[in-house]
Image (cartoon, rainbow, N blue to C red; front, side, top):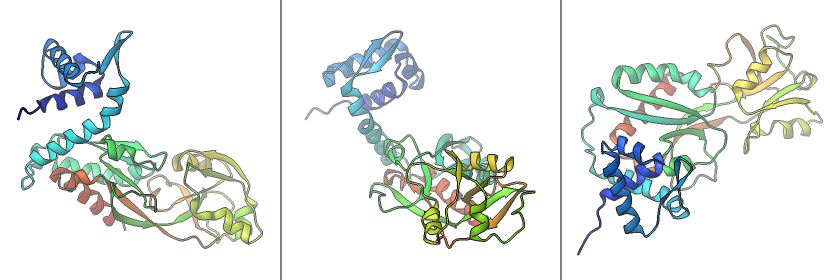
Length: 298
């Protein structure tokens, strides 16, 4: 039986990621002419142009866009199969890990994590990107290595999770705010205006429902897309920001924090990753490192 040239999958993955013959050639240590010949072979094998000229660059065809995620998954799975699982040389490991987290995580846990990574694997680079929604597409398509989040019932079986720590919401005001250092009652909480960090799927524990059940209503005068921005506004105004306590420890410097005046349930922040990386030694090492850093902060 004649088998296809599986090296073409690697070339296709890089071509689609780069969108450039020259860029793909550079990544694969090939000459541009050799990469161009490979693209010609890929077009012959697939019966599709894959990448077509648009101005000075190349854009993927609909067939190429349809194939991209699957090609990336197959290449990563093949790489994991062929990678030794019983030996990990951290001193020589060269890799970039992308971590998708809500703002506050990098500021709170990043310094210790980076210091430990530099000590154990000096050629490893961490790339933090902000989490603005609950989509796990980045884990599936391989653009994200690790993610943190509150696990919900919508988490699919194609995503692994492990608890990192338990968190709770707290109220935050500027250091010289009238509520600073005070046991805040529900009436105090709603007497002042609020800034809310909101994104799709985030309800801050149902605060407004609990207040409504008590016949109270808070006034929200500003909505932002992250906890960092909410705290920045609280720092220089009379506004109250409601944020996760542990998650934002690195952001609440010189601010006053108070217990929530309504009974909110604590929640668990988990580490998320794709099952194809379960047995990857380097990925396992990083997962354990993140867990260790978070446990040490208790």
